[in-house]
Image (tube, helix red, strand yellow):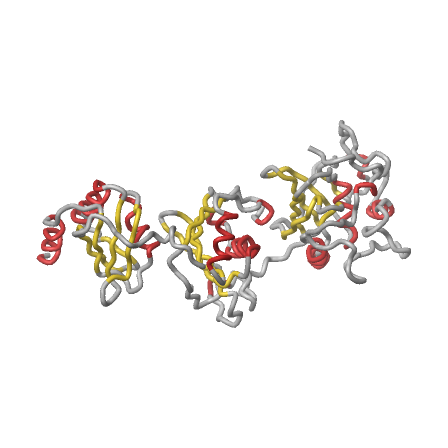
Length: 422
């Protein structure tokens, strides 16, 4: 008790300053950890860490004096000491009034970014989604994710500071594309600063950390699901659970995509049982059900990233859905059950203009084979054998991923749209 009392007295006898001196920190304590420690009491505007021979001391500077006084007073009277990584940290006022010749991690350009995911469902954003987002700007070496008082955060390591800067400039304040998120996850945005780290330490491939430069790292138990199956592959990526139901998100939707259009696209890989379209996050999405997982896997692999129309319009982004059997209560222009013996009986009449009048299929007594006969000429057409031709099997398709040139230009559906639809 005497040591505690003397420690409190030591704090109070110092002249107050908005700069605090911290001792007994873990070795190589990071600036992010210092900011998190001081954040409940105010805004930390500057830090200096790894001070002293043992690199276990640091300084933090608050925006104003009252915030520093509040932190000292709180821990001086609290029965719970300040802690970092489980170690008790001792605080006192510094003799200096500001930290000079040092910048916060957010101001020092580096190759590692500190990413805060903001949103109601931020913690549901997987490390694989983060990898997809940031790898668009260059090779991502490592990612680690963690939860702090600031929320769900990640450290993303690039090869160099130039690549990291490009990613930060483009992504800071932006939303994660909705097609990369599970269908039940609400929009999430990214807040990005620079980290003081230059090389992250990743000991295991897991759902929390990934080293993409070393695919032979051991897999942590947390990366194994309840069935005992490893859900992280040797390449360090999470193995997405496969399903017979695909979730398709449509990007750059300049032309109308109807339920019939989707059926024509997806039936090329096997019988489509059900389709349900819906609007979410300002875009159009659809659930497409196949009779088995294998057919869905082939369709996903073939269609992911490709465009329905020429010019890069209506780009498809496809993931597996958690659904296995869609519930279609009525056949209309937004949902259809192709397994029903007579779809025309349950077909609800839908008002409105059909954008493709000349080639729209008729559904009196139709079945899946009828739709195959109605497929447009070109990449999604029929072979003489009556089976849906898979344009990805016989050789390179005429449409390349993400670029101009599509399998179904608008003129395949009658006169086609005269221009972008708004």
